[in-house]
Length: 302
Image (tube, rainbow, N blue to C red; front, side, top):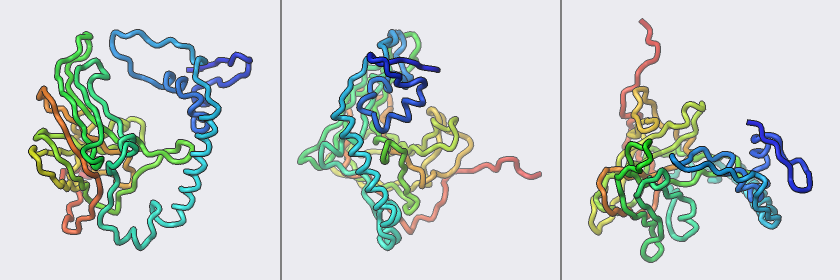
């Protein structure tokens, strides 16, 4: 869709959306409102569209300069890490590494790396919140699950709460991915209330029609005051798309991990809580399974 507009002084700013997307890494704080309105695809049923003109945006020169400094700092770090070794680790340390903590929760800055969502975004009544636990040593995800569907005439069911790590970004908003090919298990320490959770792992799709692909596995919490240390081999994660398990299964691409998330949707109305100490990786040399599910040969030879 072509888009043409001018600023008040008559300076031509952009003619198409992809040009704004190219400028966004450098001028992100200047064009945040405009970009978000151009690329927001979801609108609740029954609500009127936002027809605010795109040129009515918040302009901040100070934030723009600060953003440029931040990206050049990230670029410097990426260049230094490239010469150190894989993902910035020295080669000897990388080869001998048995465990790695990817996410821990010790400050508000650690919580800011995560996004909390619920069916309230589609008109539901569930609530989810994220805060630091006692002594600022854990993350506490809590709220209330409500399966009552919104009365908009379109939504058929409701009742979910989730948290997901933000996508890793490099200098100038370039996409980055986690390379976990040196490990074979997800390792985390949690304390729940007895509810079952779904762990979701997002990978970078090679084709646009794979953008909804998601790897899932279950996490069952015990409840009570005691902590659980959970180890889930990556070979156990199964492929789904838009909530449907796929017939064509294939192993998780550990070198293209985008992010990790947790979803609650057990259809049990009421309060919930999940406390997380850390989320990490483990290399279990006793685990030799490559993939736990059947793989079908495409176009088999007769």
